[in-house]
Length: 317
Image (cartoon, rainbow, N blue to C red; front, side, top):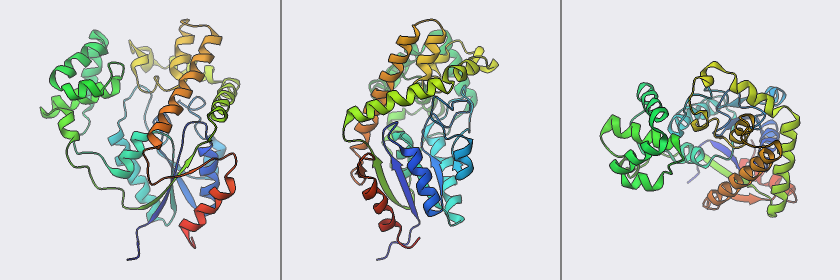
């Protein structure tokens, strides 16, 4: 039977693999709009260090799911999935091609496969949990979580405030551990035919070199000034432990914040940020290997094959 579902392209890959440039090229070539699938790009003010498409890029192609919350606000994968699905539906309704581009595996999973149903976020309760963490520390809240939900206590690290907060929020709202909610059947998959393309250099040394070069370019572009501007925001100045915020824990930002606190030298800051980015790329590649229906391309020497894969899937579009 002919599959009449609308089409979407998912451009996946580790950080610094060239996803942004390829997504722009694809959108211009096939009449598409880009839906960012990146947990750092949702935050306003995280621009240079998050490699957010600049104004010129955004003028070329319409982008979605960027600059939608402030850096002191938590933002969950469930919230992302709801908003991103709305953006995809709008793109399809206008007969444009949705291009899902990014490297956040949990966001891709939530968008493409859906998440198990559970209570929606409660801003007041989240604020209360955050205030409690400022007083007692996240390790104490993790211990509380482990007592009420041993399964989640093992899966969630004591150093992951966002997931600790969400697990406690779900339990306090429903009286049911988040691990039980997660065993519930997932919501419906995204009702589109999706071509998954993974951009990843086969030689890890090539990716490492790209990461280092890009980070140095970020420094030259004023990354540290950007972090200084974040530190000056009144809302962040009142946060007792800003490094617990998901936005500030983003790769590069945490290391820059520590440097500006005087905790490390500039050279150590650079080394730590590059190392953390390499570790992020390693985690992303591990997740991507589980995407059995994705097609992998090395952007350094398979550009032609990558370009040919799109018309074959898109047909006469």
